[in-house]
Image (cartoon, rainbow, N blue to C red; front, side, top):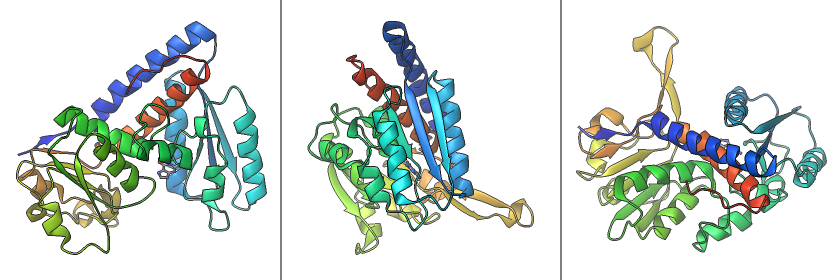
Length: 299
Ligand code: GUN
């Protein structure tokens, strides 16, 4: 049976480091890290995420501001809010919750955020720094940064000689995850829906990272014995065994069977999930310390 990574415990350690850095910033400059979270429309899942981001920011000693905009907000109104936040010296991090309603152009909004305040790491400047191996100069997308922390805790900072397979090629996760693994000297394969013989490719992975959004797609016979399996999926499925109409959360990995083959595995929930918010806090305190000329801790 594999070692099961406790994402909540690792996230709590990150949050402790963030709170200490936030206290240091306030002691030295009188300023608190400021995080602005912007949400447009009524998507219930997004509101749950945003509420927990705002709550955690307060817990870390940040100034936390939430802007809740109506479904009918125009592109110009949203970009005008981002411009105000860009200019606000008390705001160090800006997060626009995705997805935005269909009439809005997400990419234009994200690219209008000042790169130094782009705590989601989605601005082309931050994506470009990551891709060119400048890991300390920009801001890295929160979920891959969190998943990478698990990889480092398991394998150390140097992944020379290890094969890593990332299933999924999104800008939010797959691409930055692959860049982080590559920067750590892993040999990477990015697989996606057009990949041929996905099980065969996965069987070659010492580190297998699944981010496809398909419940329990990765089976035990896809997993190399002794591999590290990181599950980034969060899928809600019916759970009639819990009673009529009940549901439960599962990842992209068939956990029970894969745990028999892997050496290390992350659960869902309680694996990568808690790390996303922790790394958002880490990015915010990093941005705040840089803006005051201080050196942030490395997370
Ligand atoms: N929606 C789901 N995950 C994320 C995320 O990491 N950042 C933003 N901005 N929106 C999301």
